[in-house]
Length: 243
Image 1 (cartoon, helix red, strand yellow):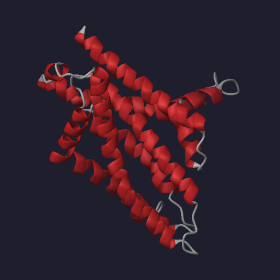
Image 2 (cartoon, one colour; image 1 turned 180 degrees about the vertical axis):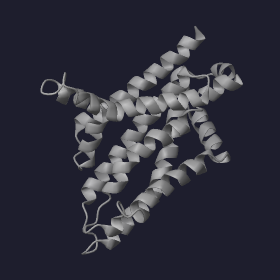
Image 3 (cartoon, rainbow, N blue to C red; image 1 turned 60 degrees about the vertical axis):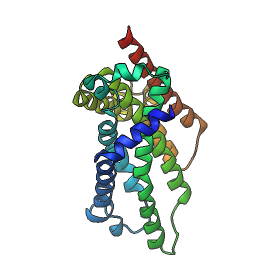
Image 4 (spheres, helix red, strand yellow; image 1 turned 90 degrees about the vertical axis):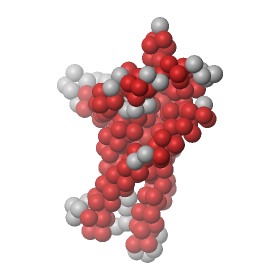
């Protein structure tokens, strides 16, 4: 698994992929948090990082599929999937290696945003007047959200022979699992009956819960379960291609 992990990381950073991902992510968040007047924290009357955690899922929904679309689709395009299958690795080890490499890249992109925290911390009146617990919870939620989107993206890539198809499919699935179930819960057939249950199926309610600074084990179990399901489905997809 470590072999695949380092191979994927080397691929990311030996080309422009890794740098573009980090640059685009930080550029979008920087514009939203410091430039655009409607969302700039400089125009707020209190210290907050809400803009970062509100916009990050939307950016992730497009950025992470762009990272994961090549995971298996490129292997199928170039014919190297057969070579990969002959290595002394199980399908699960191959999938986990690609999963953790993509997740590591996203976490690496998140690290510079700690400068935003430092900036807001310094701008507070008095200095440090912000809810650090909620911010820490939001970062934990972002990492779990990134892990979920990465598992969805890797699964989508395993289904596609074309990277663009993998990107579109992953973006669609990320949207459905994050916002789709919330929108479905607003349909008349669910309102007042099982709308709460429908919302709990989606990612948004669990991410919002962690973002409040409350680390609930039910939310942690949800994210781990969804990641595990998509990893298992990816392994099954690889085995299906062997058949």
